[in-house]
Length: 101
Length: 197
Image (cartoon, rainbow over all chains, first blue to last red; front, top):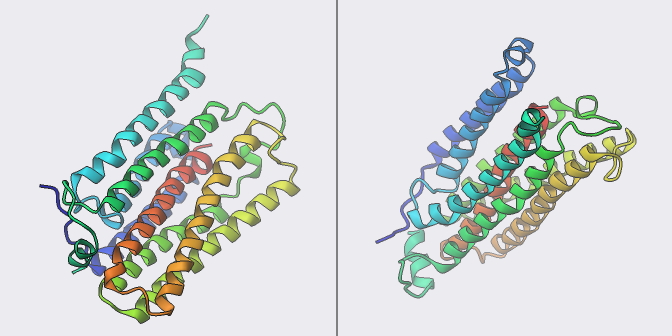
């Protein structure tokens, strides 16, 4: 049966806050390194770091790591649909036109 | 402890979960679709403007990095506020709710400054595709932050009047879920709008 579990400790919250700060600083630093942009890896690296921050907030600050899976389904099912829409639009407007005659 | 209070204040449900919390998570799920549609529009028209100002000319990365940090720290303050309410610490509840409100208001101040600067540089909702999609997307996010600040201020007043004990922890938790959602939306927007140009 689904339950609502105990949440993280204050120490964990502070650690997550520190990690979020470090990742954000790293994102901004990477943005200013032209060598990374030249390789074409800037966007994938930044999206991965952003996804990491997103996951930390959702898992620990929003307690999904400890709470019932029903909450996870209620949130992630529409979120996946939203991501499919965003990716589809990007493919339709930005990628596919390059392959059209 | 908070769980016991929440269960005591709410009749049993078939899932064993508080209906208010389930309903709020469903609402947050619908919000991902709401913002997903605006992000789709922004991405579809990204770098398609035929007149300036363009993104590379106008976006202020150092300023927005600071406002992003402010919003991230407000999320930290929010979880500390929830922990304080659960531990029945009125003093800390007032402190951390107050800090969250202050940081949220600071973020809104940064956004107001940014919008004003853009306006002075000639970028409005009607100027070009960037202006239209940018102001709609970040404007709706700012509206969500504003609602969050008002909500938190009401909770702060309840704490001030001594009406925000551990039995009301679920109210603070739900407000916190909303606040963290606003934060994760900005995490995505900061990367998609400002860092990936």
